[in-house]
Structures are given as structure tokens and as C-alpha cells.
Length: 235
Image 1 (cartoon, one colour):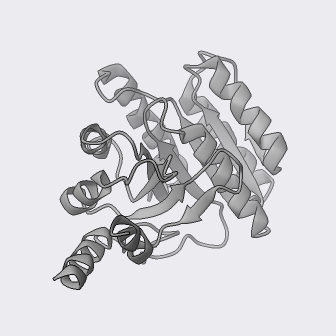
Image 2 (cartoon, rainbow, N blue to C red):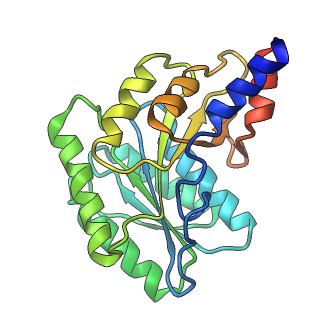
């Protein structure tokens, strides 16, 4: 029974693994343009740090990265991302606090094209899913991307805090109404929390977990392994 339960849990976590043009099974992005990843989530989940970790992973693979600091709502987010860019060796495109985030995204994608960059990572404001205007802003960012890239971003990654519990499902449902989420990044998985809410998210929304964050360092981002995750739950 124990092994059957583990197999069933692994199957739940493998739901939706075909989604996405970078980490999934859908058609890969063409070689003549940068891949585009939109990162969303609420404040406090480790979203901006996850952007930096992802940039670090791409840089380690020898790819050039442009990061859009589209969280213009919070000045500290812009400075934080610039600092991370210096650490991981990624170009950060930023405007002033309060600027139009859509303009930042447009400039970042244009810069990536002119510099022949491999990847564009777009950080967004840590908007609360209960704030209608902020969610509308996220929809505008998506439309800016689609003007330059009709098929839209290649991946939309939602960052969730492993300690959040049931509210993570509420967040995922709200964001999924605005942007087509193709991947989850589960942060703060340091052993103090099991992150079991991802079963509900994967099951109800068919969104795969792609990465887990286990610390604050640039290298603390690991590809998600459903089998290992389930085994850890039973230890």
C-alpha cells in the first residue's frame, strides 16, 4: 500500500509536465530569438531571488541572460535585482521606481534581441492576488510581450512559498486567470516544511513543479524530481 500511494503521488506531481516551450514538451523556441520567461508571485515568496538563481543556472550553462526589473512598484526590488545581476553576471534592464513595467519589459526584450542574448527573465511586482489593479498590470505586461512575441512567453513561472499552505492554491488559481502558468518554483524548502500544498496545485490546475529553492545563495536552485520529493515525505 505504501508503494502504491507513493506511485499515485508521483503521478499527481507529473501532471501538466508537457506545458512550456523550454522545460516542457511543447515546441521549443526558435533559435533566432531569445527565450522569454515571465516570473510571477506575491511578495515574500522569494521571487526576485529565484529570478537571480535562474539567471545563475543559465549563466553556468554558458548562456547570456537579460533580466527585466519590471517590479517598479517597490524601489528595493530594482536595487536588489541590480545587485543580483552583478553577482551572477546578467544584464539588468531597469527604469525608475513607479515607471511603466510594460516599458521595462519592452526595452529588455529589445535589448536582448540587439545583444543576441539567449534568455530574457522578467521579474514582476509581488502583487497581491486580491489587488485587481495590480493583476490588471500583469495582464498588460503579458500583452506587451505578445506584441513582440505573438505566441507569448515561452514559460510563465509562479513562485510559491513552501510554508504558505492552503493560500498557495488560492494564489495559483488567481494568477492562472491572468497569465497561462506553465511552471512552479517551490521556495524555502529547507526541511522545516514539506510543501505538500503542491499536490493540490498540480492536481487541480495541472501545473508542473520545475524547480525548488533550498537557500539564499545563487546556486540554491534545483530541478524538481517528483520521485525524490515523495520519498522525502515518507522519511
